[in-house]
Image (tube, rainbow, N blue to C red; front, side):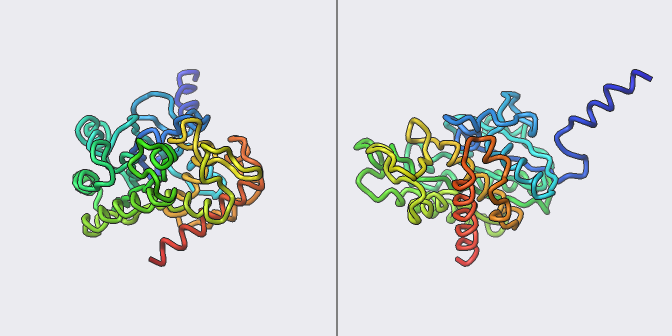
Length: 287
C-alpha cells in the first residue's frame, strides 16, 4: 500500500485543486517583488514556471484568495527588466497554454528605450491576447498599470524629472488604457495599481518623496532603490489586483488580514491600504 503515499502527498500539497481557475501572472521585478521580502513570500503557494522559487505578488494574491474562500491555481512567469515583448519572444512556448485568467505587466516606463511610448505595449499585448484567446476564448485578460518611480521623478536623469510624483503613474495608466482600447474588447480591464499609489499619496498615508526622508506616521511605498516597491507597495499591488479581478471588497479583510501580518505591515496600515485599494478600484470602474 505504500506505493500510494506519493500520490496522497501530491494531492495534499498541490497548490490548488484541478477544477480551480487557472491564473497566470506575466511580468518583471514589479510582479515578483524585488527589493522586498515579498519576492520569496510563500513560493509553495504558486507555480513559478521559470523554477526560480518566486512567490511575489502572485503569492500574496493567493493568500488573499484563501481568506476570501476563493480557489485559484496560480502560475507566474517573470523576467527582470522586461516588457511584454520579451515574454512573447523568449517565453511563448512556456506560457502558451489554456488559462482562465491572465494578468500582464510590462516595463515600468512603458518602453525602456523610449519612455512614455505605449506603442510596444500595444503591439505585444495584442499578440499575447491573440495567443491566449486562441487557447481559451473565454479567458479573462488584464493589464497591470504600475506606479510612479521616485528615481524617475526626483533625479535629474529621470524622464519625469521636475514633474509631480503622480504624473508618471498617470501617464503609465494612460498608456495601458490605450492598449486596452487597441485590443478591441479582447482585454477585460486595466488594473490601476499606479493610481492606487497616487491615491495613497493624496490621502496622506504614503510619503511622496523618499529622498528627503519619510515623514513620521507615513509609509514608504518604494523599496531601498526608490524604484521598485517595498512590502507596503507590493501589498497594495496585490490588493488592487485581487479586488479588480474578483470584485471582492478588499476592505472586508480588515485588521486580521494574514498577508499583511506576515509581511510586517501593521493592522492600521493594512486597513488604510485596503481602503485606498478599494476606493481606487471603484473610481476606475466609474471612468
